[in-house]
Image 1: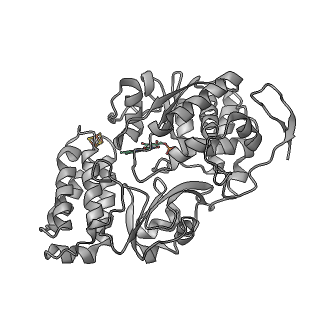
Image 2: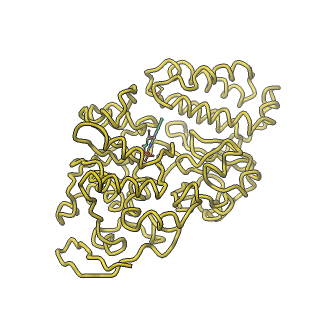
Image 3: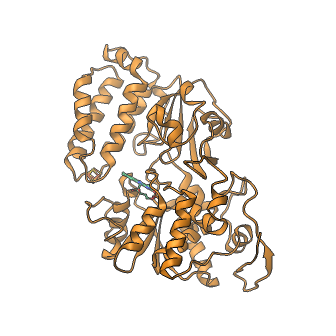
Length: 437
Ligand SMILES: Cc1cc2nc3c(=O)[nH]c(=O)nc-3n(C[C@H](O)[C@H](O)[C@H](O)COP(=O)(O)O)c2cc1C
Ligand code: SF4
C-alpha cells in the first residue's frame, strides 16, 4: 500500500499511511452508531485525500475505464452503468454540469438522507471526481430538505479549506415522488418545476442551462469516490462477479429494527433482514425495490441473493434498495391500493396515461381491497394501456408494482373479488405521506 499525503483543512499536511476500509461491507458507513455528519478532517483521515483526476483526454478515458472495470451501477433505482453515463457526458459538446440527486422522493426509502447526514463529504468527493472526469466546473447537490443544512455546512467547510476545483451549490429537493426523476430534478433546479421533461434531447446532451448534464444518485457518487481511491479490483472484492460492491438498503415494516444498512450485493435476503433484527411478526410478503418494485412471497424470497440476477427468477430487482416486510396481519391488497393512489396523486399530471390511467387503476384496486367489486380483465387492460406510454417511467413503475401484487396476492384477490374482506387492512406498513402515514 502506498504512502499518501493527506490534505487536511487545517493546512497541516502530515504524511500518513492510508488503507482502504478493512470491513468489506461497511464502506460508505464505516462507523456504526455514528449520529452526526463526519467533518472534513475526520473524513480525510478515514478515507484518504481526494484523488486528483488527470485532465487529458487519455487520462479521462482511463478513469472512465476504471469505473467500467469496477462495474459500478446507479443506486437511484434503474441500475444503469455509471461508466456509460460518464462517457456520454464526456463525449457531448459544451461545458457540462454535474447534478447529485439526493431527492429521495420515495417515502419508503431513507438511505440517501442517511448517507448525506453521516458522510456528506464522500458524496461531495464523488461529485467533485465526476466533475473532473467530464470537465465540469459546477456541481449542484439536490438534497432532501431534511439534510440540506448538513450538505450546506459540508460545502462551506470544503470552501474554507480549498480542497475542490469544482464550485458546489446545494438546492433543497422538491418534496414530490416524481421530483426525483432525472429530468424533473433538472427542471426543478432550473425553473422550480418538479416535473419530468420529454426526451430527447437526453440530459447528457442538453440538461441544466442547455448544457450536457450528468445526473447521478448521491449513493452512486459515494461509491465512485471510493473506487477512485482504492481501485476497481478493491471495489470488486465485495458483491458478486456480475454485480460488484455494496448497496445501502432501507428496511421497513414488521422488523425488529427497521433502518438503513449497507450490504454486499448478493447477500441472501434473510441475512439482509437479519441486519434489521429479523422479523417482528410472521411475514407473508416482501416488497423488494420500493414503490416501483415487486411484491414477492416472503418464504420464497428469503434464500435468494439480494441482486438483480438473484431476484430475476421472481421478476424482482434491488431497485432503490428498499425492502418492506408485510406481516400476516396486514393486507397486501390494501397496501397496494393505498400506494397506487399515492403514486397516481404524485404524477406530474402532464401525460394521458398518468392523468387518466393511474387514478383508474388506483380506483379499481381500492374497490378490490374493500371487496366492492373487481374486473380483472379491465384492470389488466388499463395496466397494458399505461405501460411505457408516459414521458417518464412513472407509469411503468406503477404497472410493475401493481402487476406483482396481482401475482403475489392472487389468493386474496379471488376472495376479495367474491366480496369477502378480512379487515386486516387496518395495520399500515408502507408510508404514503398525506394518506394517514
Ligand atoms: C418517477 C421517478 C422518480 C425517481 N426518483 C428518484 C429519486 O428520488 N432519487 C434518485 O436518485 N433517482 C430517482 N429516479 C431515477 C432517476 O431518474 C435517475 O435514473 C437517477 O437519479 C440517476 O442516477 P444513478 O444512475 O446514479 O442511479 C427516479 C425515476 C423515476 C422514473
Ligand atoms: S408519465 Fe406521468 S409522471 Fe411522467 S411526465 Fe408524464 S405525467 Fe409526469
